[in-house]
Each structure stands twice: as C-alpha cells, then as structure tokens.
Length: 191
Length: 193
View 1 (spheres, rainbow over the protein chains, first blue to last red):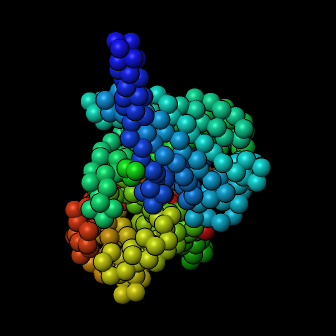
View 2: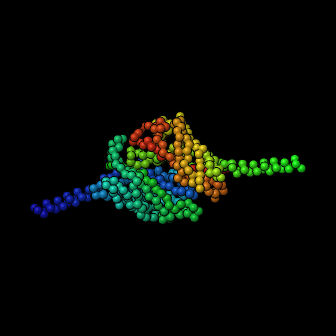
View 3: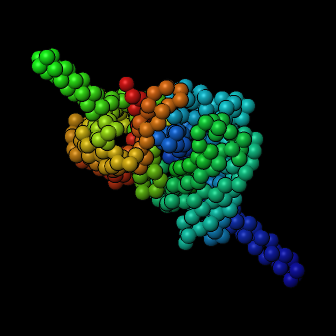
C-alpha cells in the first residue's frame, strides 16, 4: 500500500514540476514585434530597416526564472523604404533571401531582474550559420491589453552583431559597416 | 594713364569681389531621398517602442563650409507613413493622427544650422504638423561631409533627433496607451549642386 502511494506522489510531483517548468506560452503579436537594424552610411547618416514578416512564440516561467523564445524572420520581407536597396539587401551580396529565406533566433537562457526579463541569450541562424548572441532588455513589462482582453508581455531588446561572422561581407572593403545594431520590439499575447 | 589705372583698379576690385562672393556663397545640397528618412518612435502601453518612418521626404540644405553656417528645410509627405502594418498606416493617416487629407505635408525649417569642427550643433527651427507650427530644436548626433565615390560629388548629412508631444499638435487619440511623446530621428544626406 505504501509503495504505490509513494510512487503516485512521486509521479504527481514530477508532473507538477514539469508543468511548472513549461511556464506560460505567449504568441508573438506581429503588429507589435519588429526587428529594426541600424547601419551607418559612410559615417554620415544612419540607415534603418526592418523585417515586416515574422512569427514566433515565447515561454516564460517567472517562478523558475527561465524561458524559451523562438522567433523566425522572413528575410524576403526586408523593408528600408528604398525599393532598389531592398532588392540589393535580398540578393546574394547580403541576405541571399532566395536560398536562405529565414533568419531564426532561439533564446534559451533568460536572465531576470526581479520578475522582469533582463536579457535573453541564444543562437542566431542566418545564411546557414548558427552563432551565439545575447539580447539585452532595455525595458520589459507585462500588462492586460483591454482590446485583446489578455495579458501581453514584451519590451525593447537590443544587440550589436558583426555581420561578417555570418559570412555577410559585402562592402566591408569600401566602408560599409560590419557592426549592425539590432533594435527589437516585441510584444507577445498570453495563450 | 590715370583713367586706365583707375579702370584696372576697378576691374581688379570687381574680380576680387566676385571671388570673395564665390567663396562666401553657401553651397546648396539637394536631399538624397534614398538616404533621407524621418523615423519616429513612440511607446505602446508603456511596454515596447513602436517604430515607423516617412518614406517621402524632400528638401534642401544650404551650407557654407567657411562659416559653418547654413539652413535646412524639409517637407514630409504625411501619407507616406510606413509602420510595417498596413492597417495601422491607414489609421495613422486618418484624422486622429496625421490628418493627411487636410494636411498632406509636415515641415521642418531651420536657419540655424551651425557646424563646428565637423560637428553640427543644435539645430533650432520650426516644425509644422497638422497645420500647427511650433518651435523645435533638433540635436545632431552625427554630421559629416564626404566626397561620394559613386556620385562623384560632395555629400553632407547626418542624424538629427528631437522629441515632440503629439498632443501639442492636436493629436490626442489613444492617450495614454499610445504614447504622447514621439521621438523623431531624421537621417539626412544632401548632394552638392
């Protein structure tokens, strides 16, 4: 009689702890989630561009202070507001979007400041290469959205990457910058 | 002799005057639309920063390298707003925000461009949005002139920024969930004419 009870308790505990580890899932709101890049143009002005199509989800476990984020960006949706430049950025010189249409970030190391996400480290896959990046949170907040009638969590993250690490080298020899700042707006809706 | 000498002197003076005028005349730079954008940022529900831009910006910069003084005037087609969300762009063009039908252009005009040691100083001027004009001061975060290898011309420009309250220009819809503070980032490059 004792043994099955203990086993049951152990199973219940295992189920409970795995449920807790799963945390809460939030689906990316594509209308409030954008990756914007900044590139200095010959040290004169700063060009910004964004990706209009993206998809993903975030799981946050505030108790365990852990989480997982998966965001996929469609490289063909690059948008600088200058059509010919978008065409060049999609070409083999930069994103090679025909052969490598998706850019993916998988974040699996969340650090917290209290109950707010402070940074997310993970892997960025671009042009077939996967390398570590850390996104620093400039702000993070959760609120009840009155239109959606759901909890929404999100904020602003940023990082700077050296594009040559992913093999994107065009223009480095004539003054286009290697370091690209990424500004990441994200809001995700509780499921 | 005396008359001839006098004429020569007048001639020399005229040549000298012309040369001085040419040196002092500010050069005009026409805005390069592919490297001139007005970007905006505002806070959404106090949580994330929503960004957008205006794609159609025209104008010119006059800049006298010797004195470091000049003026900037740009005109922004408000209907060219682009947030990456077409449905939102339609709302932004509407009467609650940009009122693009009634006010197709926004303007920034400054006679106070001043560059010292390659660094542009504060740019004081007037910003007109929704038909309301108010003083606005832009801070330069980058400014440089370069000889552009492709254009074979001198290009001057940089990044300027300012913060406005949209309520100052009569746009109050969605407050406070959609922020009142709007940060404007102006990337501008002008090609010497």
